[in-house]
Amino acid sequence: MIERYSRPEMVSIWSPSAKFRIWYEIEAHACDAQAKLGVIPQANADAVWKVKDVEFDVARINEIEAITKHDVIAFLTHLSEIIGSDDARFVHQGMTSSDVLDTTLNVQLTRASNILIADIEALLKALKRRAIEHKNTIRIGRSHAIHAEPVTMGLTFARFYAEMDRNLARMRTARSEISTGAISGAVGTFANIDPFVEEHVCSQLGLKAEPISTQVIPRDRHAAFFATLGIVASSIENIAIEIRHMQRTEVLEAEEFFSKGQKGSSAMPHKRNPVLTENLTGLSRLVRMCVLPAMENVALWHERDISHSSVERAIGPDATITLDFALSRLTGVINNLVIYPDNMISNMNKFRGLVHSQRVLLALTQKGLGREESYSLVQRNAMRVWEQGADFLTELKNDPEVMSVMSVAEVESQFDLAYHTKHVETIFERVFES
Image (cartoon, rainbow, N blue to C red; front, top):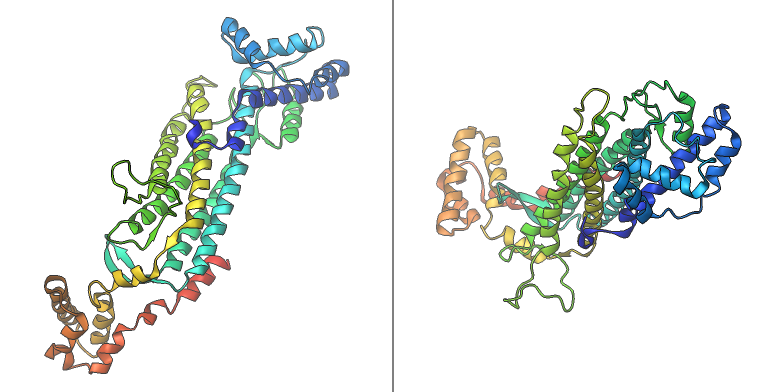
């Protein structure tokens, strides 16, 4: 991923030096297990660990790979150069390249998951704080982008909190599913290596032994993992879209923080654009772009082919680095989001009481009118508000059919905003106390 959308901690997981360090640890732990089984001398296993503080020469490994055309062999050759060919002769005993590659990938994805989980937890904290802050800040709810009925800004934040809380559970499940390793040999039969080696290596790396592998760990696990990243990305975009709408000039119910010295446009000095949330929409697309290839990787030929390999070398770092950056950016947006409660009230009143139409409809049915008749009475008065700029309450009071079944006080009582927020506390209890 490009540096612009990257954070160092996540990037470091995918660096060549970090990858080769994991390769080394797998080989060294495998030697320990082989020595415990009496397959190789303990002295040879100890010799591998003597270079544990050595920094592997990435350039040298690449130089060897240019000749061997095989990355794992290039690494093993370099390791042999460091510890000596005699001491290294039992390294990779009974193993195949995928034992190293697949187990390493899952270590990296597990570590990436830890960062993503922490990111989501930080975002949840920000959403909860803003939800409580604006629990009773009334704004208009919209369906089809059209005014519907009143909600609160706190409910909007709470809705996003609940969605991200589900994503936290999904991410924890994805981490558990991807946290497996396989050291099972050429086609997964353990013919040339004892299952104890796999169990030992996995326990040392914080993984579970894959119950059954071929030459590779089953890719349905990876498909589920990347699908989860895609869902999290979609939730990010869901929040970003709402903020982008609220920042529209004719809405302006909220906006991204505009810092001193910030410029919105190279041509128009007045502009304050929702650049961060637009960026989040784009980053979400990038993460979701990785989901379909991960699913297509599930279908491999027989016990293994490498059609998945080139895909994972790209989507592993790209998806996790991008999502990490996006979650962090969204947390900053939420923490610094500027809210305009007065504009929310002003917007809600633009159509002079129409948001109370359902209350009037229900009140008329309670007075004995049929639903269709009640709907017709309310709608004809509502249309005069849309088309002529009339006031809804005034129109109802001037409608003899409405007033024949309701008093003025009864009509006016349907225009109480507090009616729409009376269950906010119940919703908050459901969202936050669970």
